[in-house]
Image (cartoon, rainbow, N blue to C red; front, side, top):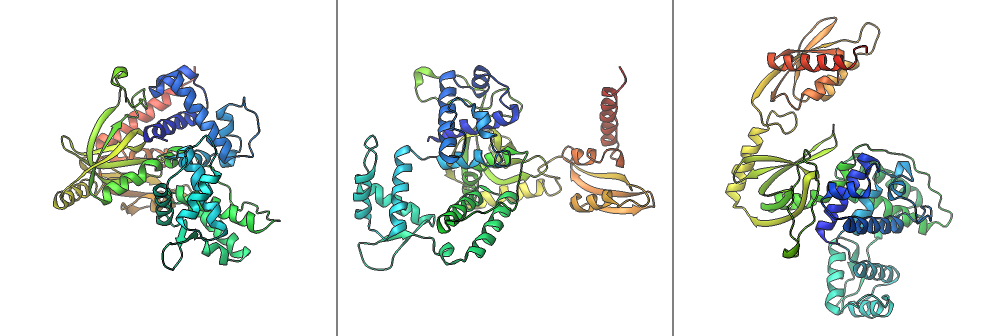
Length: 437
């Protein structure tokens, strides 16, 4: 599947979750910047992937895709990331071929020519047959990602599936490993590879034990789907950062109505897009755990340090590499600019002073515990029986404001004065919403 098609499906799934299927076909197409025909093709492709991955779903062909995604409530945090990543960049012929190769090497070690003969004899008639170069390329890729292993010996080399670890573990050890992977995949970043490993372990245990009936020890449900969907961009960007390469992409600001536009390949059918073509040197990727958002920070030739939400990035491509000295200088500049940012704010340095109130006598002091846990490098400067003063230096107040606001009446902003006035105005506005009618 083409990279731009994958971008489109990510944006489609994001809207599907956020709107709960409230849009009709035309509204979805308009929002994505695509035609109704392309929208229908995307729906068809997603249904095919979902049916392939989740074979336990009802065989109701008229079932809406939104219902398909939400069929298993506790699984709905990961099907989107899993079946999209399984489909990414895999043509149907590649998918069939790799499946055949892995199945064959699971039973015995085989040479490239033996695998070629097997593929040519087993591939469906409607798919093109591979040549020796293609098979050797597949073997090289599978060996690089650790799926297969080349046996010691002379040419012609033989290859087999590399699953020595799980084969040597007892059933109890496999269950412990599965539970550990399950926890890490659902709580750590990034998580996509962990889901793959978890599913692989589950299938291996099912094959190994005919009477296998493993009950899930932990159940998870996430509200922030973008956290997982945006991992599609993460590894491309981390590779660019590691290799000091510029990246080019089409950016759609979250404030814009359109979140995607088809990539024009025919000059006769060019169309205007609302996306902004950007080229910048990526320096850092930051995850905001409070809102489930990924951010890309880097250096723009025209604007200097610039920040982007990963959910707005499409059609990402790596460009030329930057000089090592130049890259280190820009990275050092970024670190200085965000040294005191609550997250990625690069505003003017200010000292925020807040009075937090204790819950009351006989009540566990959850307010102070939360401040100590989440308050980053801030500190408590004074304390009385009723309250305590918390101070912190930050690059502006935009990002710390939601955190302070979440304490409600348990806190009062003391400084700076402008920030205090902003909070007063917000609470007055909220009070107005609740005035009696």
